Length: 218
Image (cartoon, rainbow, N blue to C red):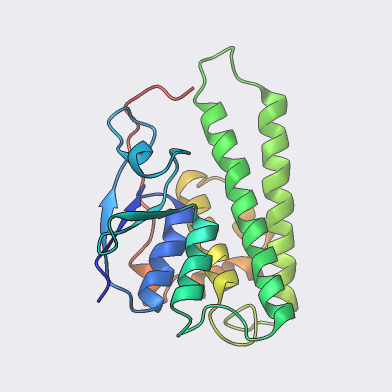
């Protein structure tokens, strides 16, 4: 039986992907919540890039697996059943493409989120607008994928895959950190798909919550 610890920030969509995957694969773990931006974080002890999530394999000499893409690939390779990838090559490649877009949306919004936290007079509106354009373009792409799925509960092959997990994670984070964003009205079918996903137990019990950042980040 695995004896693992997942170090996560409570709002993190990247870590949420891993939390969902671990539960879907019935792999037990202990959740350790940190604020990676604060000076008290222990993240650098495990990840030289100082990013979360980090999966600690406590039963294997404290080996650390980090970066959500890699953790997801590691889990699928080591624990392939139940699989969270489509069975065919094209399906696998599409699922990874969806993950790239979903994580890219989040990357852009994280940059915009912290830009908003800069002091008055130090913010770049052009920079923020660029990040929001990237996020909006990504959301439009996800909405198109959902429409092409024709109302299916899941995006690929009628079963939960990495694609669904990635989309659900970023849209949950978007709802938390950008509550005034108009994506739900602009992409109603994407919102319907998200709301169905969000009722699944592994999504419902991993919904993000905000953290207070005590140290100055920007």
